[in-house]
Amino acid sequence: MDGILPLWKERGQTSHDCVFKLRKILHTKKVGHSGTLDPDVDGVLPICIGKGTKVVEYLVDSGKIYTGEITLGFSTTTEDRSGEVVERTPLTKPFTTAEVDRAMASLTGEITQIPPMYSAVKVNGKRLYEYARANEEVQRPKRQALIHSFERISDPIFDETSGTQSWRFQVSCGKGTYIRTLAVDTGAALGVASHMSDLTRLASGGFTKDQSVTLAEVREAMESGRINELLQPIEYGVSGFPKIAIDEKLWQNVKNGMPLPYHSFGLQEPPASPVALFYQDKVVSIYMPHQRKQGLLKPAKVIRTEIGE
Image (cartoon, rainbow, N blue to C red):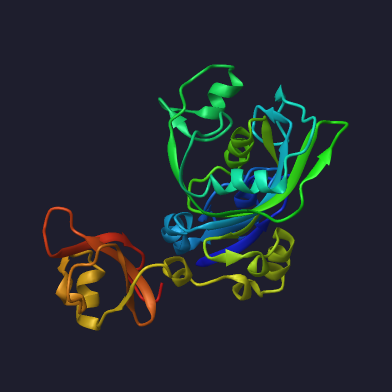
C-alpha cells in the first residue's frame, strides 16, 4: 500500500497517536506524518504510506493555512490555552480594530521568531520542551518564518470583567512557523501579554479540509475494501517540482542513481532547483544540481527503481 492520506486530525490526540492507529488500521508499519499538530489543535495532517514516505519531506516544505483565535490580557507557559498563566496585563479598554490590524500587518512577510519553550526544537541535543519540563533556562535560537498573509476575520470582543480581548484570524505561512508565537508577538506589538486561544489547520501539503478524512472513515474504508479511494498517489507529493518525462534509455541510468548532464533531460540550462523525473507517468526520482560537478544533475531522492512498485 503506497500513497498519501489527507487525514483530519481531531483534538485530543497527538500526531504520533494518529500514525500509531493508522499502522494498526492499515496493517503496515511504513506510515509517517508531514508536520506535527499539537493535541489541542485539529486540522489537516497529510500521512504518507509505504513508498509515499519518500516524499514526506516535500510535503513538510509546502505552505500551510490556519484559522484560530488570539486572546489579549494574559500569557501562558505554552503560548496557548493549555499552559499555566505566567503574566497578566488586564485591559481596561479595548484596542480598536485599526490598532489590531496594524499589529497583525507588522507581522507579515519574512519575520524572526523565537520558538516556544514547549516545542520540539533542539538545543545542545535536547528538545526545548525537555528543558521546560525540567525548569531549566536555555537560550532559544532565532528562526526565520515567512508569513504570506495574517488577517483578522472577526470583530474583536472585549470582556471588561476578565480584562481580555479576543478575535479570530486566518494565516497563510511557510514551513516552520509557530502560530502560537505569532499570537504572542501580536500582543507584544500592542504592548500587552497574549496567547493563542484556539487553532485549526485548514490546509497542508497541498491538501485542504474538504479533501481530508477522519480515522473512523479510514477504518470503515479499510473494512469495506475501499481504502484506495481515499489514497492520493505519491505523485501528489512532488507536484511543486518541475516535471520532466524520461524515456526507457534514460530510465535505465536514472534507476541506478547515475549523475547525468542536464541536457540529457532536454533542459537548455541547469535548473536552479530540484526537478521530478517521471517514467510512464510515475515519479521515479528527484534530481538536483550537483554541488561539485558543474553541468551535472544527481539524485536527491530515488523514489522507485521498478515501475511495478
